[in-house]
Image (cartoon, rainbow, N blue to C red; front, side):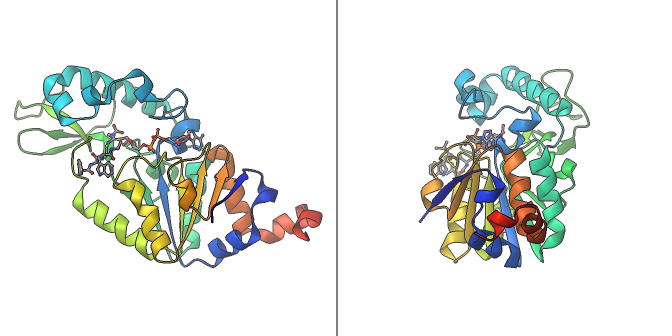
Length: 265
Ligand code: BV8
């Protein structure tokens, strides 16, 4: 049965912390919400991108075919936002956690590259990366080291380049989805951070962990489609909740000395 609590360190249930502490294999599934405190807008929820823009024009192959300039103007705008942004304590905590477990997989729906910039090494990008572009004619992939200037950017062969991301109606990269599904199925615990859990097949990954007896802990500002299935939902900003959870799980003695009364409840 799902348990929901606020983000305060003292409220974190000891049984959940113990299961994370004992875990040999942990995966993290992240969505746009983990980058919100880095100043990168989310898609849904308060002030979300899809409130202002039509996803059919900007995040579908049909929309790109119809108006590649409009789509690239939006991606260039996002590149400029991401260019200025920095990883926040949620990204940094996840990078630190990686060293503490036998196997630790970061599975992200985000295309902003923030996990790698925070130091995470094992990152599975389900929806591509905004710093890559792909030739529409032959699929050649170009690494971008800054926001595009000219729109639409062209490949050296003269054909159009498109963002190397996964749009609605497009298949996810097969290998990435395979690795992510295996990781979710084999994890003793999955932490799900900042996703509305409405976009599939990413949203179904935590259910694979659950099905195989793994623990699912959700961190979000509000309830999502995943909340009824999570063992624990912690409501609060990821930049605060993620470090608090890891402090309690990894360094319980520090919490005991700082909070002897609560610790002996
Ligand atoms: C596919 C491009 C085969 C990259 C994006 C099964 C059931 C239903 C539908 C489908 C299904 N299978 C396939 C579909 C169709 C579709 C889909 O899922 N539609 C949904 C919307 C109904 N899926 C696909 O098309 C996928 N392809 O499956 O191919 C197929 C195709 C057709 C039909 C059948 C099979 C491709 C999906 C990828 C789409 N690409 N974007 C880009 O430009 O970024 S989608 C977009 O949504 C982003 O990729 C984003 O990552 C993704 C998910 O969103 P979230 O990351 O969760 O972000 P969101 O804003 O929604 O939520 C943020 C959350 O954070 C909120 O809950 C908020 O409360 C919280 N938050 C905010 N601030 C904070 C916070 N939390 C903590 N701290 C904070 N500070």
